[in-house]
Image (cartoon, rainbow, N blue to C red; front, side, top):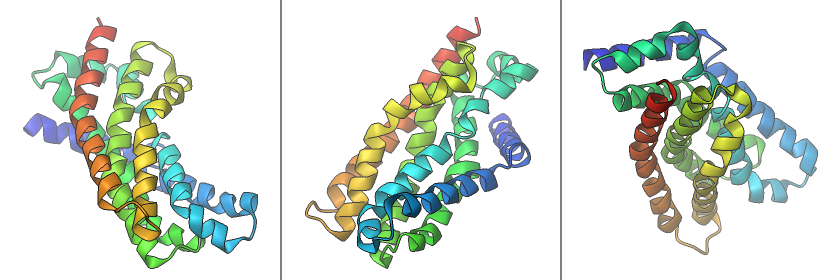
Length: 222
Protein backbone atom coordinates (compact mmCIF):
# COMPACT_ATOMS: atom_id res chain seq x y z
CA UNK A 1 0.00 0.00 0.00
CA UNK A 2 2.92 2.35 0.64
CA UNK A 3 4.26 1.83 -2.87
CA UNK A 4 0.77 2.28 -4.33
CA UNK A 5 0.24 5.52 -2.42
CA UNK A 6 3.70 6.79 -3.39
CA UNK A 7 3.01 6.10 -7.07
CA UNK A 8 -0.37 7.85 -6.86
CA UNK A 9 1.10 10.95 -5.20
CA UNK A 10 4.03 11.02 -7.63
CA UNK A 11 1.79 10.89 -10.70
CA UNK A 12 -0.51 13.59 -9.32
CA UNK A 13 2.44 15.89 -8.67
CA UNK A 14 3.82 15.31 -12.16
CA UNK A 15 0.41 15.89 -13.75
CA UNK A 16 -0.06 19.18 -11.90
CA UNK A 17 3.49 20.37 -12.58
CA UNK A 18 3.96 19.30 -16.21
CA UNK A 19 1.69 20.57 -18.97
CA UNK A 20 -0.63 22.60 -16.79
CA UNK A 21 -2.46 19.60 -15.31
CA UNK A 22 -6.05 20.34 -14.40
CA UNK A 23 -5.95 23.91 -15.68
CA UNK A 24 -5.04 22.82 -19.20
CA UNK A 25 -7.96 20.39 -19.38
CA UNK A 26 -10.42 22.93 -18.00
CA UNK A 27 -9.22 25.61 -20.43
CA UNK A 28 -9.64 23.20 -23.34
CA UNK A 29 -13.10 22.31 -22.03
CA UNK A 30 -13.96 26.00 -21.84
CA UNK A 31 -12.70 26.55 -25.40
CA UNK A 32 -14.88 23.78 -26.83
CA UNK A 33 -18.00 24.98 -25.01
CA UNK A 34 -17.35 28.61 -26.00
CA UNK A 35 -16.83 27.86 -29.69
CA UNK A 36 -19.99 25.79 -30.09
CA UNK A 37 -22.44 28.76 -29.85
CA UNK A 38 -20.45 30.57 -32.54
CA UNK A 39 -20.75 27.55 -34.84
CA UNK A 40 -24.42 26.82 -34.10
CA UNK A 41 -25.76 30.35 -33.88
CA UNK A 42 -27.73 32.36 -31.31
CA UNK A 43 -30.59 29.87 -31.02
CA UNK A 44 -30.94 29.49 -27.25
CA UNK A 45 -33.49 26.70 -27.52
CA UNK A 46 -31.17 24.68 -29.74
CA UNK A 47 -28.27 25.25 -27.36
CA UNK A 48 -30.41 24.10 -24.45
CA UNK A 49 -31.40 20.95 -26.34
CA UNK A 50 -27.89 19.91 -27.38
CA UNK A 51 -26.07 21.38 -24.39
CA UNK A 52 -25.54 18.03 -22.58
CA UNK A 53 -24.00 16.54 -25.73
CA UNK A 54 -21.65 19.53 -26.09
CA UNK A 55 -20.49 19.20 -22.50
CA UNK A 56 -19.91 15.49 -22.86
CA UNK A 57 -17.96 15.85 -26.10
CA UNK A 58 -15.86 18.61 -24.56
CA UNK A 59 -15.11 16.46 -21.51
CA UNK A 60 -14.22 13.49 -23.72
CA UNK A 61 -11.75 15.50 -25.80
CA UNK A 62 -10.27 17.23 -22.75
CA UNK A 63 -9.68 13.88 -21.03
CA UNK A 64 -7.52 12.78 -23.98
CA UNK A 65 -5.06 15.65 -23.59
CA UNK A 66 -2.76 14.06 -21.03
CA UNK A 67 -3.28 10.40 -21.93
CA UNK A 68 -0.47 10.35 -24.47
CA UNK A 69 2.10 11.02 -21.71
CA UNK A 70 0.57 8.66 -19.15
CA UNK A 71 3.06 5.85 -19.86
CA UNK A 72 5.29 7.45 -22.49
CA UNK A 73 6.98 9.77 -19.99
CA UNK A 74 7.78 6.85 -17.68
CA UNK A 75 9.05 4.87 -20.65
CA UNK A 76 11.35 7.70 -21.74
CA UNK A 77 13.01 8.17 -18.34
CA UNK A 78 13.16 4.46 -17.46
CA UNK A 79 10.58 4.59 -14.66
CA UNK A 80 8.32 2.14 -16.49
CA UNK A 81 11.01 -0.56 -16.37
CA UNK A 82 11.33 -0.09 -12.61
CA UNK A 83 7.55 -0.32 -12.20
CA UNK A 84 7.45 -3.54 -14.22
CA UNK A 85 10.30 -5.07 -12.20
CA UNK A 86 8.96 -3.94 -8.84
CA UNK A 87 7.00 -5.97 -6.31
CA UNK A 88 3.82 -4.01 -6.96
CA UNK A 89 1.62 -5.85 -9.52
CA UNK A 90 1.54 -3.97 -12.80
CA UNK A 91 -2.28 -3.96 -12.78
CA UNK A 92 -2.34 -2.08 -9.47
CA UNK A 93 0.33 0.32 -10.70
CA UNK A 94 -1.69 1.03 -13.83
CA UNK A 95 -4.85 1.51 -11.75
CA UNK A 96 -3.01 4.01 -9.52
CA UNK A 97 -1.81 5.95 -12.56
CA UNK A 98 -5.35 5.96 -13.94
CA UNK A 99 -6.74 7.24 -10.64
CA UNK A 100 -4.12 9.99 -10.54
CA UNK A 101 -5.04 10.98 -14.10
CA UNK A 102 -8.74 11.16 -13.24
CA UNK A 103 -8.16 13.18 -10.07
CA UNK A 104 -6.05 15.74 -11.94
CA UNK A 105 -7.95 15.79 -15.24
CA UNK A 106 -11.41 14.24 -15.00
CA UNK A 107 -12.53 15.58 -11.62
CA UNK A 108 -11.78 19.25 -12.51
CA UNK A 109 -13.93 18.81 -15.62
CA UNK A 110 -16.82 17.60 -13.45
CA UNK A 111 -16.41 20.62 -11.19
CA UNK A 112 -16.28 23.02 -14.17
CA UNK A 113 -19.28 21.50 -15.97
CA UNK A 114 -22.02 23.31 -13.96
CA UNK A 115 -20.42 26.69 -14.65
CA UNK A 116 -19.99 25.95 -18.35
CA UNK A 117 -23.58 24.68 -18.50
CA UNK A 118 -24.73 28.24 -17.86
CA UNK A 119 -23.04 29.29 -21.11
CA UNK A 120 -25.31 26.85 -22.97
CA UNK A 121 -28.53 28.13 -21.38
CA UNK A 122 -29.09 24.86 -19.51
CA UNK A 123 -31.66 24.66 -16.76
CA UNK A 124 -30.58 23.71 -13.21
CA UNK A 125 -32.02 20.20 -13.59
CA UNK A 126 -30.04 19.64 -16.78
CA UNK A 127 -26.85 21.03 -15.23
CA UNK A 128 -27.22 18.70 -12.25
CA UNK A 129 -27.87 15.70 -14.49
CA UNK A 130 -24.85 16.43 -16.68
CA UNK A 131 -22.58 16.91 -13.65
CA UNK A 132 -23.78 13.63 -12.13
CA UNK A 133 -23.30 11.67 -15.34
CA UNK A 134 -19.83 13.17 -15.83
CA UNK A 135 -18.90 12.24 -12.27
CA UNK A 136 -19.89 8.65 -12.98
CA UNK A 137 -18.76 8.47 -16.61
CA UNK A 138 -15.40 10.26 -16.71
CA UNK A 139 -13.64 7.43 -14.82
CA UNK A 140 -14.71 5.15 -17.67
CA UNK A 141 -13.08 7.54 -20.16
CA UNK A 142 -9.85 7.48 -18.16
CA UNK A 143 -9.64 3.74 -17.54
CA UNK A 144 -10.64 2.95 -21.12
CA UNK A 145 -7.95 5.38 -22.24
CA UNK A 146 -5.39 3.39 -20.26
CA UNK A 147 -5.63 0.65 -22.89
CA UNK A 148 -4.93 3.06 -25.76
CA UNK A 149 -2.10 4.75 -23.83
CA UNK A 150 -0.47 1.38 -23.15
CA UNK A 151 -0.78 0.33 -26.80
CA UNK A 152 0.65 3.63 -27.99
CA UNK A 153 3.64 3.18 -25.67
CA UNK A 154 4.18 -0.46 -26.59
CA UNK A 155 3.96 0.25 -30.33
CA UNK A 156 6.21 3.34 -30.07
CA UNK A 157 3.64 5.42 -31.96
CA UNK A 158 3.20 8.17 -29.40
CA UNK A 159 0.19 10.43 -29.21
CA UNK A 160 -0.70 10.27 -32.91
CA UNK A 161 -2.12 6.76 -32.55
CA UNK A 162 -3.88 7.35 -29.25
CA UNK A 163 -7.10 9.09 -30.44
CA UNK A 164 -7.60 6.41 -33.12
CA UNK A 165 -7.38 3.70 -30.46
CA UNK A 166 -9.37 5.35 -27.68
CA UNK A 167 -12.23 7.23 -29.33
CA UNK A 168 -14.05 4.14 -30.70
CA UNK A 169 -13.89 2.53 -27.24
CA UNK A 170 -15.47 5.57 -25.58
CA UNK A 171 -18.53 5.73 -27.86
CA UNK A 172 -20.79 3.64 -25.54
CA UNK A 173 -19.87 5.87 -22.57
CA UNK A 174 -20.66 8.97 -24.62
CA UNK A 175 -23.99 7.56 -25.84
CA UNK A 176 -25.32 6.59 -22.42
CA UNK A 177 -23.89 9.66 -20.71
CA UNK A 178 -25.76 11.99 -23.06
CA UNK A 179 -28.86 9.77 -22.99
CA UNK A 180 -28.98 9.88 -19.18
CA UNK A 181 -28.54 13.68 -19.19
CA UNK A 182 -31.34 14.14 -21.71
CA UNK A 183 -33.61 11.66 -19.94
CA UNK A 184 -33.40 13.69 -16.74
CA UNK A 185 -34.75 16.75 -18.56
CA UNK A 186 -37.02 15.75 -21.46
CA UNK A 187 -37.49 11.97 -21.20
CA UNK A 188 -39.24 9.87 -22.44
CA UNK A 189 -36.81 7.20 -21.18
CA UNK A 190 -36.48 7.14 -17.35
CA UNK A 191 -33.21 8.57 -16.07
CA UNK A 192 -32.35 5.38 -14.20
CA UNK A 193 -32.12 3.18 -17.31
CA UNK A 194 -29.23 4.85 -19.19
CA UNK A 195 -27.62 5.95 -15.91
CA UNK A 196 -27.48 2.36 -14.67
CA UNK A 197 -25.86 1.26 -17.94
CA UNK A 198 -23.37 4.12 -17.62
CA UNK A 199 -22.49 2.94 -14.11
CA UNK A 200 -22.04 -0.61 -15.43
CA UNK A 201 -19.70 0.62 -18.18
CA UNK A 202 -17.63 2.49 -15.61
CA UNK A 203 -17.38 -0.53 -13.31
CA UNK A 204 -16.39 -2.73 -16.25
CA UNK A 205 -13.69 -0.27 -17.33
CA UNK A 206 -12.29 -0.14 -13.77
CA UNK A 207 -11.71 -3.89 -14.00
CA UNK A 208 -10.83 -4.41 -17.66
CA UNK A 209 -8.74 -1.27 -18.19
CA UNK A 210 -5.89 -1.93 -15.72
CA UNK A 211 -5.64 -5.62 -16.63
CA UNK A 212 -5.64 -4.97 -20.40
CA UNK A 213 -3.19 -2.08 -20.11
CA UNK A 214 -0.95 -4.05 -17.76
CA UNK A 215 -0.85 -7.05 -20.11
CA UNK A 216 -0.10 -4.75 -23.05
CA UNK A 217 2.78 -3.08 -21.24
CA UNK A 218 4.18 -6.39 -20.04
CA UNK A 219 4.18 -7.85 -23.56
CA UNK A 220 5.33 -4.67 -25.26
CA UNK A 221 8.32 -4.09 -22.99
CA UNK A 222 9.65 -7.65 -23.28
